[in-house]
Amino acid sequence: MEFGRIRVYIQRGNQPVIFVAPHGVDDLNTDEIVKAAADELDAYAVINQGFMRSKTVDVQSDKADCNKIDHVIQDVVKEEFLDPILNFKKEIERMSAFQDLKLISPLTPHKSSSIEEIPSEQNPLIVIVHGAGNHVHKIVNDTVSCVVGCGRGTYTDSIICKEWRMNLFIEVFRHYFTEGDIYLGKASGKYAARKKNNIAQYFKLYKKNHKVDVLQLEFPPFLRKNKWESVNTGLNLANVVRDVLLCDSYDSTVYIEEI
Image (cartoon, rainbow, N blue to C red; front, side, top):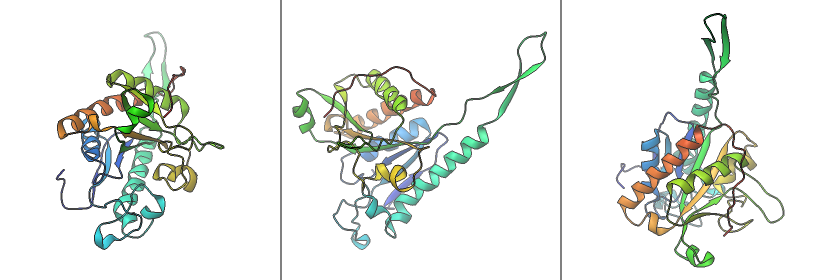
């Protein structure tokens, strides 16, 4: 993907959503998914397109793991990758506060005007996109369309998204992604987004900010095998998130198997 020669591509939006691709270099076409989703939804995007995954940080050699907190808080990587996420989050919060206004509307011709609140305030939603391997289908003996991580642990959870919002996301996802099914990362497993060093846990564990919702998504190869499939996946993802943004609650529980 040619967004320029910079290592991290950033894009401003007008929706309370930040799409993030920490491994845009290494996880094939996750950058394309994020860019297409952000464009379609008019959302924010932060795409690592230059830092190659590494166990150590070496900015001179374009090496860093942007999914690890101890990497993204280091100089240069923080400036290029983490700071845009933090700045976009602040922009969303300011935008939400500005839009939290009162609307004056007459109820009937025989009554005086009444003041009615516009339900505009939204917690920022950060959607982190990764790529899973084909082995996920063999694990469950089924076609996996996505694995969602929310911070579940073996002994203690560190939940990074409100339960109703994740349940709604899962239900809507099944409507737009009809091949295979979405699975939940099992407690403390590879896809759980539970490790303390996982960027998905940054706001929960390190900022103690509970007004941010984060979802970690893992897409298998068939949904990102080429640019066309990846863009289509991004467009479907944007539709899912758009529908989720329309709601401020969801009462139903959903059934989802673990992987």
